[in-house]
Structures are given as C-alpha cells and as structure tokens.
Amino acid sequence: MVTFFLALAICIVAALVSGALLLALTVENHRFWKRHQQRGTPFEQQTAKVNLIVPCKGVADDTRRKLEAFFFQDHPHFRISFAVEAATDPVVPLIRELQKENRFVESSIVVAGRATHCGQKVHNLLAAIAKLQVEVDVLAFADMDALVKPSWLRWLTIGVGREQVGARTGYRWMVPGKNNLPTLIGVTLNNSVAACLGKGSHNLVWGGSWAIHRKVFEQTGMREAWAQVLSDDFVASRTIRNSTFAGKLLKIQFEPQCLCETTVNFGWSSLMEFIVRQLKITRLYAPRHWTVATLNSLVTQFAFWGSVVAWIAVMSSGDRGWLPTTLMFSFIGIYLLATARAAIRQNMARRLIPGWRKQRQARRFDLFAWPVTGLFALVALIESSVGKRISWSNIHYRIQSGGRTMVLGRNVESESWPVRTASVVPDPKLSRFRNSKAKPETADLPTATGVPGTNVFANTATPTVERSV
Image 1 (cartoon, rainbow, N blue to C red):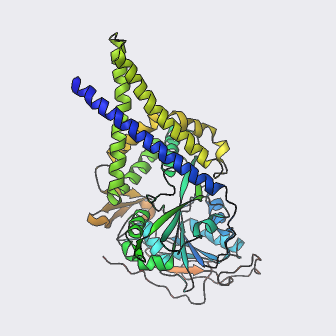
Image 2 (image 1 turned 60 degrees about the horizontal axis):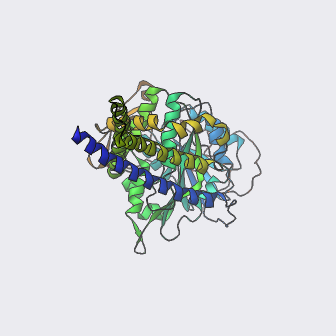
Image 3 (image 1 turned 90 degrees about the vertical axis):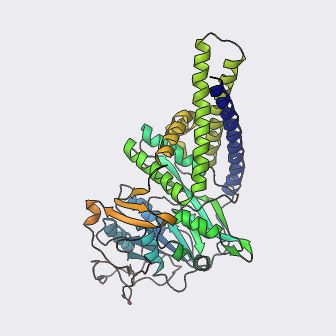
C-alpha cells in the first residue's frame, strides 16, 4: 500500500507539472493564433507560380464541395494536379466535371498506377511531381477531404522560399457530421493536437495542407526521402528539419489561417482504426513524439484514476483527515487543467472555423469529457505499441526497418483497378497560370487514351515514375 501511494504521489506531481506546461504552451499558441486571426487577407504581391497537388481516392457526400473549393483560390498564379491511383476511380468523373465547369483554372488528372514500394498517397504525389511544369516555383499539397477557404493558398505560400523557411503548414480542425460518442471522441483528440501548433520550432508538417519551395524540395532530397515510405508528412518534417540553408537549420512555419475544416463520422471500429493507424505511423516514423505522448498519457491517467479510486477507498474507510482532501484536490486539479486547455483551444478556432458556432455539442464534450477521451487515447496508444502492419484505404502495408514500406495486398475493390504507369491528363483550353477569371468558350474536347472524355495537352507522352526497390 505504501508503494502504491508513493507511486501515485510521484505521478500526481508529474501530471500536474505536465498539465501546467501544456496549459502554458496552449496559452502561448492562443496568442500566436490570435495575432494571425487579426490580420486581413494578405496584400503582398505573389509572383511565384504554384502547383497544387491533391491526391484523391473515392467519393463521399461532400467531395464535390471540397474539390470545387480548390478552384476558387484567390492566388494569382496556380494550377491544380489531381493525383489518382487509377482512371476507374469514381472520383475521376467528378474531377472531369469540375474541370469543365471551372476552366479559368488550369488543372490536370495524374493517373499514378499502383504503389509497390511506398504508400499509395506518396506514390500519387511522386507521380504528380514527375509531371511538374518547368516554370513552377512552389509546391502545395492538400487532402481531398479538407475544406479550404478562398484565401487558403495565398496564406499557405506567403514567405515560402525565404531564408530558413523550409515549409509552411496548416492543420485540420475536425467537425462532427453526427454527434455520436465515437465521433465526438475522435474530434476532441484531433483538435487537441491542432492546438499544440504555434510559433515554436516543434511544428511538424501536416500532409493535408502544406507548401514548400521547389528548390528546397529538390535540394533537401525530398523525392528520394519519399521513395519507399508510407508517411509523407513525418518524413517531410524530418527531412526539412535536418537540412540547412546558409548554415542555419530550416524551420517549419505554422499558419493558423490555413486551418482546414474536415467533417468526420466515426463508429467505434472506424475510430479505433483511424486513431491506432495514426499513432502507429507516429511510432514508426517519429518515435520520440510517440514515446513522449505515451509516457505523458500513462502518468496522467494513472494519477487521475488512481487518485479517484484511492479517494473513494479512503472515504469508505471513514478517514476524514488530510489524505482524502489531498487526493480530491489532485484529481480535480488534473481535470481543471485539461478543461482549461480545452476552453482555450475552442476559443482559438472560434474565428477560423466557419461552422464553429454550430458545434455546440462538440464544444461541450471537449470541455467536460476529458476523462473519457484521455482514457480512450491511452488505450489507443497501448494498442499502437505493437506491430508494423498498417491498413490504409483498403491497402495493407508492412513497415520495415528505416521506414521502408512493403505493400502486402489490397481489398477486392482495390484489386479491380488496372495497373498503369503514371500519366497526366490536363486541359488544353487553358493558358499556363492564367490570371483572368473569364471562362473560355466551351467545345468538345479530345479523349486521352485510357481515360475517356478527359482533356489532354498536345504532348501526351506517358512517363514512368522511377523508384528504387
């Protein structure tokens, strides 16, 4: 019993200190976010030509709305590359339809084919990068399920390429499609990570919203670093932070204005699959981050639940001395620190997320349900501590030493897609990086081989994306 209370006392002190440090970090990040919220739309002249790459797979109810938002960016010089695994993907007809409706923006479909030695998303990105036009200065990346604002691309690319700016990144802010318990837990866990991003040097790239100068991309060896990996963002973060410019380490800047709204619906199985996959990728590609998170969760949960159980046991024994009072203040203190962080991060997103006011139930859950979300996070961390097999978008991978990826197999719906080499299907009616918003005259468009009804450049050569085995 003495050993238990000694261990509990140590964990309580550690949990309170950790909670206070996280609260201080959240307060500092809140100040950083608030300063950025008060800025208007950037008027800095942007002459860099941007190629936005959006890997796509499948169609959801809100896919059209989210993909269309990429066409309406107020950046003066950008084009879009939609990268898919196969021309038979159901998202391809939707993209072609959006291309016809929004011909004032140059866009193309890159058919990457199947990945064999890296993640399918990374394979799609590399295929799109292999088809970059010569005049492209900046690469921007986005996930298809992120809802971006019209000023998103302009904010994301400001300052890219300046001294020590390795990359600029946003993050996702999840909003619940339905207010069931698994969805609310997933939303809370994700948004607590978003609040950790700020001005400091600890920022990591999020693959769903980031930009990098083309010269930095090439000089850091990003293409080679991605050659055989599953995670694009963790590897990009490591590569950038280990690179130097003029003798100084490159930094990753977080831009709060590039926070992207992502609507989610989880059941228990899909939530556990998503969280464990994210944590397992973190363990395999950023082990220090995973270790710190796991230790903090173990200590905090043991301190909180241990003090609750000990308080109940002591009170049941009739003890009314200093011990039950100390235990009560311990778990209340841990809870209040977590609640304070939740209140601050909700205020951080208030002006950045358009639908924030409608998420009343999600906000209340975030404020008061920390014991539930914290316990779930610990369970997910423990489950992610073993194994190197990961399933992602119907494809099964095994992560080998050094982060190298082996594709183990695919589900039936993926197996029906044909194997193709990388090809690009652009729109010939569009001038490169056109500034005008006027739509060109419509006409019947030529058909690309293998992709019926899709627009093509005059040069229809089909490249192959080379990768080492």
